[in-house]
Image 1 (tube, rainbow, N blue to C red):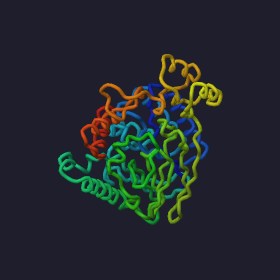
Image 2: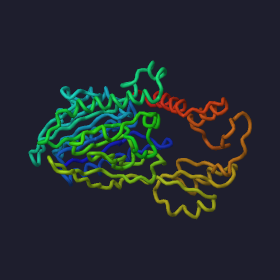
Image 3: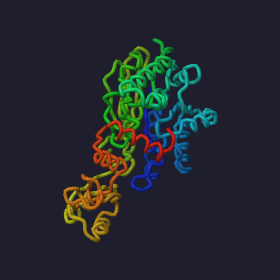
Image 4: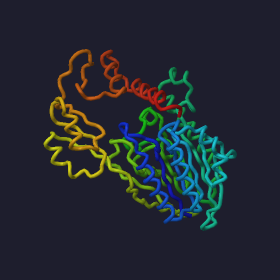
Length: 389
């Protein structure tokens, strides 16, 4: 049987205030075109369909159309919630989606209650057993009181053990005569970050080793980390990565979906299909004259610009005149003016500071350098600004 693995669509994501909905539509059209050409038996969407727990109507309409188009080719479509999605909302639409051949799983379900999906592949008749695990927040395994009272190692251990127990229960029905699959949205130890993930929900010591997946699993389809990668494990474990770079930290990532062929007793074959829709993200550095010389090479790419000149009146307007697709313009720190006034030591003059950077500066002034405190601040900031997990 054949399956298509995609994840981390982040529909509704804006970049520096710039809507990317048209790009996201182009990317999803390309994914549907790949599915139409390859005719998979199964399409797996491994979480983060949306960028927000409360997506706008246009974003919801785009995701619904894409899922219906994928189901329209005759494939079984299964999508789970990621940390950016609102799991209960996906579950609320589960009956309606099911009528269209789409299975939505927003929250953890035991195997007997929908956590293990069993069906026959339409092209081969092979039995398929698919264990699905939406994003499990730290709170699922560690209560607030324990988070404060226990050590980070103890809390991480509780999370690791909870995920192991869940996966053991979901995969107990895997058999030698079936294609055994796992789809999950989580961080695997040793995975490389793509550059645009919510770090507080990725690095806060809550990750699991690839050995948590049973060795007799034919393929593990992961979402959450935005970089395309496979991880060493007793079975094939793959992140397909985001099909569209969500931030400038991902500008060099390769966008793709994974095409997988699997059969009982046979190692899975994995093939990457590049996704080329969407505008490139690029970072340019240089003086105004150097930027002017490079203006003809950027095409329609969206730009982050580091100006290697001291700040002066009209500089931003001049850069925008040369590079109208510049979404972010900053003075290179080497050319920033000296820190003055009450800004903490280590500030960068005219360079915009993120809340995390400002909090880190404050901690430094208080003589408190603790990575866990800064990560907790980032997690709380994500929850306040991004809605519930």
